[in-house]
Length: 251
Image (cartoon, rainbow, N blue to C red; front, side):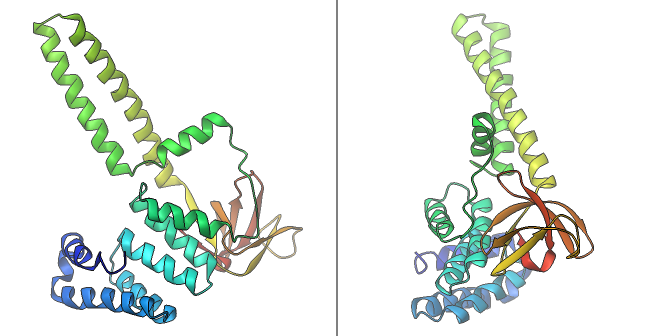
């Protein structure tokens, strides 16, 4: 996969970063260099090459995915999960990303089950199906469909057209709801991954507070608040605590 996508990425880099046109050849070569390093099991050099691409302002699911692979092979589990998650945000239905993310999670020491009920889990799964742009685009399509059928219904009052209008309106309203939730969640939620080997979580933003538990590399959490050098984080099971900012990286 790493070899097959290099030409595609070159075009993507040109489209999303036109200001980097002058360095396009270097960016492509850098990506291919990272691939060669990876293929020769020189994972640290591959990481450096992919990170240089990100430092140029490039945000691409393939680069994130390859970087996650390199970190995983370099035995940096937290970083691997971090970049798989970044890749998944840009390409949420990619099976390779999903497979590698699921596999890497098997090595996380903290086995924490989510406290979400069925309805919450369904909503989360639906929201994770697509990006904000995809939900917005689908909403716009069903808006056009509803408007078109509405105009047709005005001139032809046939039952099948009315039923079609009702279906389109229903999907349109549901998509508006999900798009609104998706936009709100993506703008307000800050998720992070523990990238240090272990982190002590306290009841307050200082080591003088009570130690609640110890988290380990690869643990995923949600940032709810920050104070000085500390984050208040929530785990999937609802537990909360304060941990040092340096121990995690935001997705």
